[in-house]
View 1 (cartoon, rainbow, N blue to C red):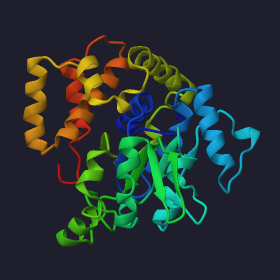
View 2: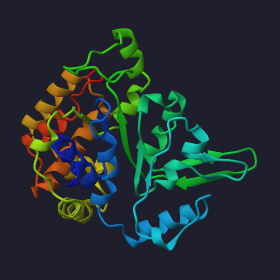
View 3: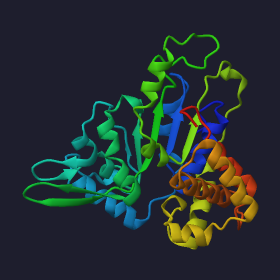
View 4: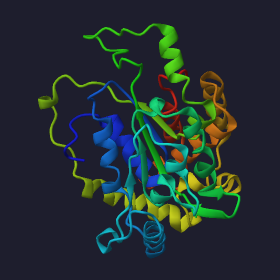
Length: 308
């Protein structure tokens, strides 16, 4: 993390995502460090438990990758190319084998150039993002693989990548930009907890070296330990009944969420994800309850440049 100069908001979101196992979308021009940030997420994730390490090792052992002892306890980071097929992503074959979503189990699935993926391929992510597993049905047999991965995606603001830049003009017309962004469906966007812009920085030399990953990981580990002690799972995986129990909102907080939800046109699923993110922010700050400050910060990560 110390290699990333500037981009304080993006690094803040990365820390929140790591602490609560939240899904993240980064939007910005080419060369702003989106891929660099994504590749540093595994370095700040909490240590794998023995059970998580066993699950990851088992999945690798039945895939074409095979398992090496060097991979034991290392959270996977999978970054398939945008030309990947649906079978490559979710798994399949005559004798079903795990795909990228299962190979990323208990780790990170990074999708760069998100709108360049086939829309039908992206839609198959919706089921495992909710359930944490994928079912592959064939005429002769059916297989179920775990797929509890953390999705991190990156994309340009427009096809040419220059939208919003002061020193470079965008060559895309509004219709092209709309079609480009419309490749990502609303239901998939609903499942992305944190959506932020990663701007271009002009003077990198003006920034001091940031915290190393080890320091950030300590805060993330403490926040994750609080979540496991409270509900035995990360905040991103809380079912609705546990969300209501562990993250109750005061009337003023509910009013803030309702007002922002109407303005941002948030679905009920998106509002629940905002509450989960707010709970993670409170855990990073060692707060027993979620306040309006944490809720407002969580809402700010839904107000981004894809129509909300």
